[in-house]
Amino acid sequence: MKEPILLEMNGIRKTFPGVVALDDVHLDLRAGEVHALLGENGAGKSTLIKVLGGIYQRDAGEIIINGEKADIQSVKDAERYGISIIHQEIVLVPEMTIADNIFLGKEAGPAANIDRAGMLKKTQELLDSFDMGLSASAKISSLNIAQQQMVEIIRATFSEAKIIVMDEPTSSLSDKEVDALFDTVRRLTAQGIGIIYISHRMSELDVIADRVSVYRDGKYVATKEVKETTVDELVTLMVGREVGNYYNRTYNECDETVLEVRGLTNKKVKNVSFSLKKGEILGFAGLVGAGRTETMRAIFGMDPVESGEILIDGKPVSIHSSKDAMAAGIGLVPESRREEGIFPAMTIKFNETVKVLNEFIHTFRVDHKKENEIADKYMHDLSVRAPGTFALVGNLSGGNQQKVVIASWLAIQPKILIMDEPTRGIDVGAKAEIYAIMNELAKNGVSIIMVSSELPEVIGMSDRVVVMRSGEISAVLDRTEADQVTIMKNAVNI
Ligand SMILES: Nc1ncnc2c1ncn2[C@@H]1O[C@H](COP(=O)(O)OP(=O)(O)OP(=O)(O)O)[C@@H](O)[C@H]1O
Ligand SMILES: [Mg+2]
Image (cartoon, rainbow, N blue to C red; front, side, top):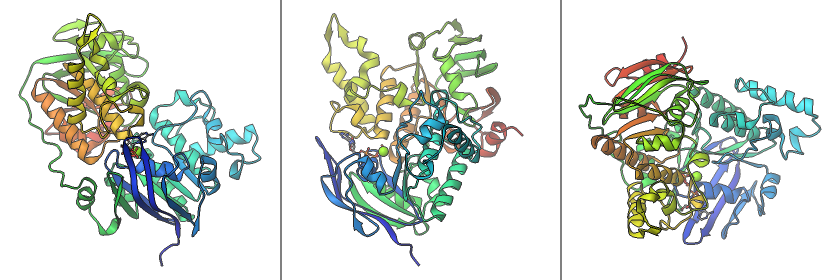
């Protein structure tokens, strides 16, 4: 027998100036089910969720909860209806502890009548149940993104919610953390809680979702039982066309070494040595926390280096800031793009061109033609979905913001481009576009370092794969020997 319907959203419409974000959109959710939402970047998934959560007011449509029309005008209203949302952007308070954040604004429910000691104890239990190895009294600002995301998840699940929405919860989690999350999801659905699950990782659908609804350009396309559909069918529904071969690499024969890192050591990484060739894509694999991002930050001058050497074209360079790094021809697309990569209150054009601005300012006169050319080119190349390059980046969908950050680094035309999790939060169609751009760059002699937690991507795109473990390099694999098993063996401690 089918479980009762918890939630129904019908005819939902939401517009922003110049954008119809949702047009006659439908969603229904059963008790105890995991319902996945699929759609390209900008399709309207987060907007739909924000309408449900009372963050946006809908222009039209109805929300029905347990068979009755629900009046959701604010976040508080939504909470009263038992709706709990883990947003795509992390919204924790950095200067407060994990425990404070988990209990923040939770006067009712399981959190009521708990004193400070009890609060710490309960939080510690929750953290331990996720095997997080963290202290309840640690400050949020001391955690990495994956850990913060887990705290968000724990916070949302620790409530009396009947409907829990997860907007890309796994985007920065390692496999182990994803497993822990899925265990929690199963525990919640067993209690009859309905879960709306947004993710660009198609491989997760089979594992966790019961049904899936697809959206395209702000419109509802279809709902399918996961068991009765295929990834291919879903992708076609999503993008309205078939997405061809993903990893179309043309490998370049080149022995010219562009970058050499020797014995790089600081608080987070130990004795890291490797070389990068001209036109090569060098993959960096490893578990979350293995020191990959930390290595890149050190090379890019963002973190201090205690010892070690960096050589570019055979000559030692001294890099103490990202400005030094850029002057040496290095670009870095950061992992946490929202915090480090974006001016949300500025336009797409500004964000795409800000790093190369000095190139077209001639004695106080900005060359707008050139500025527009660059902005338009990258908006097009990366298919950024927005009304135009004048749109404010803060108003773009999560994935489209990511694309703008990538564009801003492509615009400086670096000799060496470091990309940390380049396709995180990017939809299937756009992923293929980013891979094509990477391939093209490599073909033109740009050397790319790609840090990625997605093994198929590492294997599909890399000439060679560096594997890191506990702050050190554990293996450097040629593309012929870099398979999932070999990489994983070197990534974990056995
Ligand atoms: N506050 C806002 N102001 C203006 N436009 C907005 C605003 N929020 C969203 N939009 C627009 O609405 C559309 C849908 O965005 P939404 O964030 O819902 O997409 P999404 O499906 O969640 O995409 P992603 O996979 O990239 O997260 C986009 O075109 C976006 O630019
Ligand atoms: Mg979104």
